[in-house]
Image (cartoon, helix red, strand yellow):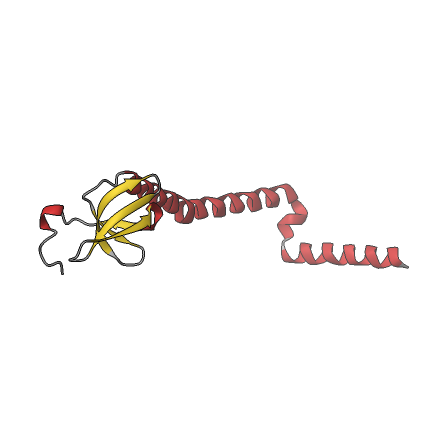
Length: 126
């Protein structure tokens, strides 16, 4: 009895598939190729819209972190502005505020380098 039920389900699925897509009954290889082309197109869209821009951004961040040097004015991910006083391996010492308080940060905690130079450091920043 179990085999009859399975055979009945298979024939019902075949009828439903043929009713939905008559081309599949005539040429199933063409249908599989078209599905394959659709999947490849979806992968290409994901690559160009998600993966490639993220890799480009990661590369720019890595270049920025590698180019840090003492005297650069930077912003941390916590929103602290400071001037780099020293760099040692993966830590950066920043001078912060009017009292030039020194703080130590991880290199990855630097968000960006500001356009303000050390000579302009004494001026009020907006």
